[in-house]
Amino acid sequence: MSTTLNAPAAPAGILIPEARRIGPIRLMRHTAALTWRIITQVRHNPEPLFLLGVQPILFLLLSTYIYGGEMAGSSHAYLQYEVPGMMGYNAVFATMAGAPALFGDVGRGVFDRFRSMPIARTAPLLARYCGDLMLQMWALVLVLGVGFALGFRIMTHWWNLGFAVLLLAAFSFGLTWLAMAIGLSVRSVETVQMLSFLCTIPLSFISGAFAEPKTMPGWLQVFVKLNPVTWLGTAERGVLLGGAVARPVCYTLLSSAVVGLLFAPLALRGLARRR
Image (cartoon, rainbow, N blue to C red; front, side, top):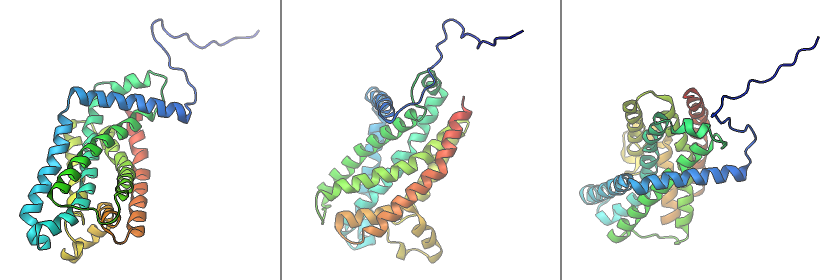
């Protein structure tokens, strides 16, 4: 006697997503579609644009005109040092600000909806990176515009600005996985905000973004010299103002890859645990 086992039929009205491999072209299409969703959200709620644009400009003005003379002898001299450092500060601030937004999407069941659709599992995470990168570029344009109005000048070539932006995008890609790991691993929005804040402050301020490490205590210089934001600021100064480029660029890319490799598994595991 033979027995035939049949898979149970799906209940009426419930769609089962087709299990098939998603190619790179379709992954890009899915990511672009979900990135457009984030842009549409910003269009209907432009508060993130205002906060990410105004906050670094206020900080740039305050630090230039209050501390610039003491730090570098004049506000103009400090502006040349500070603006490349502000690019790294913007990268950290804008990227870590994506963690609460990701937590909100998960809490509202948006990712459950995505999982019911035949799209790549990583497309929503890549779309979050692309959306945050666009917000970061918006803040960068404002900071550079104000910096140029105050007297900041590129001392190498204008096209080096494109390389500086690409370096920021590569650095942000590694840091994005840290923000995603936070947004997908904790259980309350208060914890997400606190962890994001605790990561933003030491990465951005205990670095060489705003002051020369050699002016700091010796024990603090150890952390500052290991901080990838220090090397990012040094690389941006080398690209835009002249100076060493190869070593700080290599260190920035290496640190971004290490951060991504460390936190990408945590982010994916956090996403799987939310099922």
